[in-house]
Each structure stands twice: as structure tokens, then as C-alpha cells.
Length: 80
Image 1 (cartoon, rainbow, N blue to C red):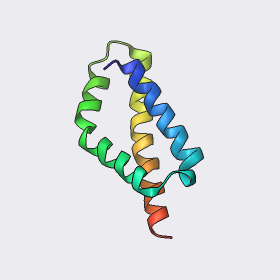
Image 2: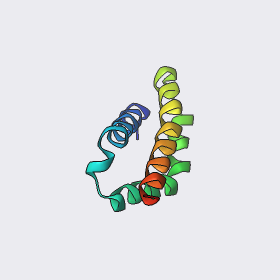
Image 3: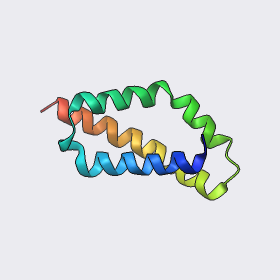
């Protein structure tokens, strides 16, 4: 997998979490969170091994932001 593709996917998922969280069932968000947790090392290795410094930097910023926003949005929804 290419870091450019991965960075774009992080950006897309982050946009969905920020702007459309309420339109998607919580079970689907939890499933996404579980996939990200299970593949975190793999995804980080793609970022780490990238030879595209600008895209690598962007992916390094987006990935933890996605994890944080997704986790907190799920937590808030489940505590309602």
C-alpha cells in the first residue's frame, strides 16, 4: 500500500468522523475503530517506510488525529 493512498484514506475517514458521525450507526464506527487498532502497526510501518517526506508528514499527523477523534466520538455517543 502506498502512503499517498493511505494519507488520502485517513483524510477521508477523518472528514466522515467530523462531519457525518451521527449519520452512521455506532456499530460501524466501532468496527472501524477495531480495524484501525488491529492494523495500527501495519499502517504505521507504511508511514515510517515511506520515501515521500511531505506525504509522510501529513500521514503522521492525520493518523493519530483520526484515532483520537474516532475514539472520543464513540465514547461520547456511548455515554449518551
